[in-house]
Image 1 (cartoon, rainbow, N blue to C red):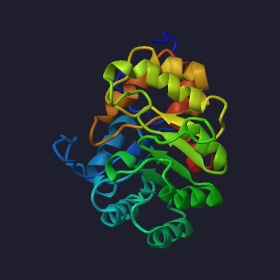
Image 2: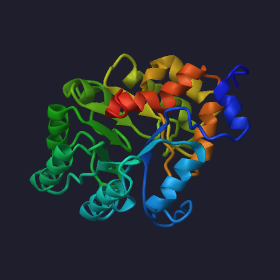
Image 3: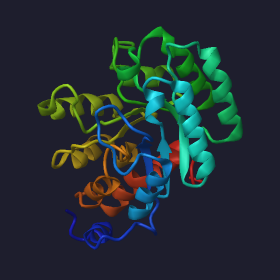
Amino acid sequence: MNQDSVLAEKCWWGEALTDELVIDMHAHLGPWLAFPVVDDGSVESLVRQMDLVGIDCTLVSPHVAIGPDWQEGNRQAYQAHKQFPDRVRPYFTPNPKYPWAQMEVETDRWREEGILAGFKLHPAVHGYASTDDLCVPIYEYANEHSIPILSHEWKGEKVEGQHPLRGLAQRYPNATFINAHSAMNWEDPQGWAQRQSILTAAAAGQDNVYLDITGSVMYYGLLEEMVNRIGAEHVLFGTDVPFLDGRAQVGRILTSRLTDDQKRLVLGRNAARVFGLFGL
């Protein structure tokens, strides 16, 4: 821990970050099969979690959207924003296995209303690869309108000989490509260092690529190493609420060995810039 950190001191005293900009760019709503959720997974419980630690704004994708029903899930995301317009922003979650024209109508409405945070993709659950042709309309739309894309993973064939995350980011330079859960390795929990090497190599020097550190596991020193490799300006904070308790997710950033300026970038300033929030 940085012994001179004002932010770490707030953590030790259990103070909410009411005078800091904190944006949770990766959270959910609702239940998930065979997985406990904090509180009841409602938008009201989300806001209660936010208030405990001082999170100003949270970007959400309901579980039903990344699971069996993209239409119902996006309706819930829209309603959550309408209920808490200053605190909750919705991702639009497309399922590429459905006709893009059907999803584009709703996406246009959100964008015209100025509420679209970005796209949330979940290839693992919806059953496709990030490089499949059926994703092209989503990427083209994001590129045309400069929309961020958060994906659970970026897998598939190499793009121009590069990792899909980097190759797609270069092919669609006006979109922002964000890799979720970048501090974890789903397939091999012991292979976290190798996965981080792959992801940081894909992100390094690529202006429109960001890594989010949402997840239940972060090995000691991993955050600092990620920042050393790609810069604090390209790391984003998320909680994965209601899967996880947001207090622990904030705490591991506050007590890291990053400088307070770097912590502020990760906690909110980067997300404000990427998603066009709070005038940054």
